[in-house]
Amino acid sequence: ADFEHEPVEGVSMRVLLIWLLVTPVQFGFGWQFFRRAARSLRHGAANMDVLVALGTSAAYGYSVFSIVVSVSSGGAMGRDQACFETASMLISFILLGKYLEASAKRKTSEAIAKLVTLQPQSALRCFDAGESTPDTKRGDGKGGGDV
Image 1 (cartoon, rainbow, N blue to C red):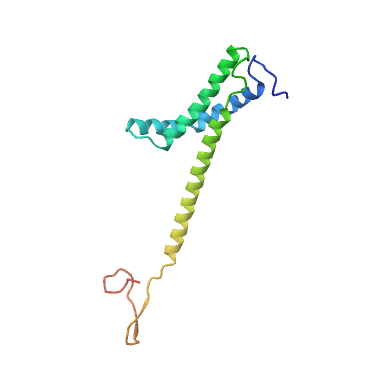
Image 2: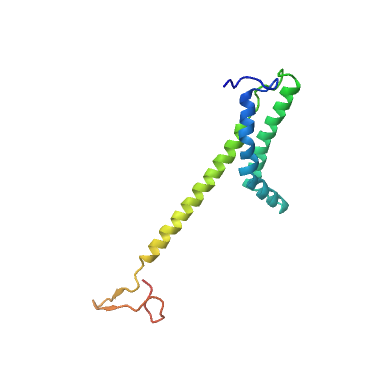
C-alpha cells in the first residue's frame, strides 16, 4: 500500500490511518483520564489526570487542526504536521505504568501475607539465670507474646 497517496488533497493515507487508529485510544482508553480530571477540577484541584487529559487533548487537537489547515490550503500549509501518535503513546505508557504499579502492589501484599503465615505461635524465652520456660501463646494477656 502506498501510504503517501493523498485520498484527500493535503492529507496522506499515513496520517488518515494514524488518525483512525489513535481515535479509539484517545476517547476509549483515555476516557478514564477525562472523567477523573473533570471530577478533580470540580473539587478545585489539579492532579495527574488533569495533566494527561490536557496533554493528550492538546496533541490530538493540534493534529486535527493541522489536517484542517492542510485540507483547506490544498496541502500548501500543515502537511504531515499531525502528531496523533503522541497522544496515544502518552495514554499507553501511563496505563502501562498503572498496570505495573498495581501488579507490584498485589505481589507485595501476597508476599507480606505469606510472611505473616510464617510467624510462630509460641516462643521460648530465655532468662538471665539460664532457665528457659515455654512462653504462652501470643496475645493472651499472660505476660508472654512479645516475640
